[in-house]
Image (cartoon, rainbow, N blue to C red; front, side, top):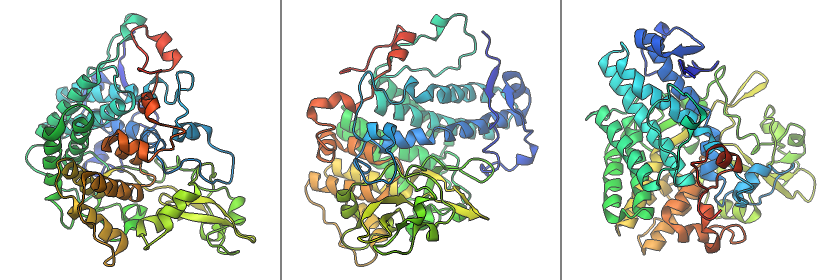
Amino acid sequence: MKHNKIFTTAALLLMLVAAACTKKLDEVVPQSSISKDQALKDPNAARTLYYGTYGLFRSYASTFYQLGEMRGDIWVDGLFTESVDGGLQNLYRHNISSLNVPFANWGGMYNLLYNFNNVIKIIPQTPLPDAEKTRILAEVHGLRAYVYYTMLRTWGDVPLNTEPVETLTNTAATYKPRTGADSIMLQVKADIAKSLDLFGTATPVSTDKRVVWSKLATLVLKGDVFIWSGTHMGGGAADFTTAKAALQEVRNLQGANLNLQANYRDIFDPTKKVNNAEMIFAVNYELQQAQLTFFGNFSVNSIQANTLSFAQAATPTVASVYPYVSGANRVGMNQAMITRLTSGIADQRISNTFRVMYSNAAPFAIRGVMLTKYLGTVAGTSQIYNNDYPIYRYADVLLLLAEAKTKLGEDPSAEINAIRLRAYGSGYTPFVSGSQSANMNAILEEYLREFIGEGKRWWALRRAGDSYVYANTNTAFLSPSSTAKFLLPLSLTMLNADPLLKQTAGY
């Protein structure tokens, strides 16, 4: 079977408006599918192929979120007003087995990798200007590294494929065994190195929307990856030192266009996307393109909005504050987590991330929480969920750098205190460096508060080390006797479809 269409989707051009790095969008001819021959002849077709990768990447944002967040401790057995979302419950309860497999078929990510491989192979052969080709390849090598890194953390060994599939003669040609995690990590690091090489020496900070991959994103990914390999794959101090250097390179660029936003809410404000100083790379959502709706289960339906209040009183009702929000409330925080996050000195991250909901009738009992971070804007009588979804932002740089320093036995207090100053204001209690475990626990507490709803908590716990996972997880769901659950199993359908695949160890 000849694959002569390299990207076919009705939403292929969704990113054209958002990706303002291109100065000639008016030259791009809308098309529903792009053939290899078209891309090789027509620079506009080649650009359409390139932009399509971002449109496809966006379709995986919910998967990235769930993989990085829902197995952590934020949403475990919380209070909610409707029936539970069973799939998300299985993740936070770690109710996972060979017969109960989340994210079958590798979460569909090989479709994404297939398109990255096509771009990497085809773009050099197109009539695009050389500088544009180089930039595109730098971006896509970074994106591919991010996806393979996510897969490595999720499944460990995964099939490695860095070439486009152009011709299939039989089913057996699709069979591919799992490649060892060490080799996958080598590929991730090779893609990172290639991305940085292609980006070259310049490190400009975009003054537009940060919705295309950049050299800064590759450097942050490098820090993330090398901390992981230093912790879990034998890299030790050498890898932590490499991570620190990459993250310090980004921190050295701190200035007007790269910094923590003074107002935490401004990070996510859909009206303040242009030159958002904190954002490094985000998945773009816009009206008439796509909306960030996958957080509907963290909202509330329109009927209950009239019977729930944001204070232990009859008013204000949820409906009076958010009259056009309509979702569900199938995931929540438990009382212990609510108390932990809302007690003590006021933290602007918490007040600008979620709001506690109460019954609006005495005795005004707590009913749950509403995630307000991504509620977007109002257009007429509709709620428009047009927040961008962050993959990396400057707060990541600071906390990852604090991690690298901690694991090298150095003092991370400067980075932790920068985060705390923004969160609490000038009256905050400065952090003083202590033991390595005390420093790591302080970092993890900031991760918990800083990134709610951003798909970071589970990865932060895992990257810190196994003992930190157990210390922050209900032992009824995950304990030292269930270490296999750090990685996900393969479904029986996957194993039956490909005889070369082997089940994840422990399942």
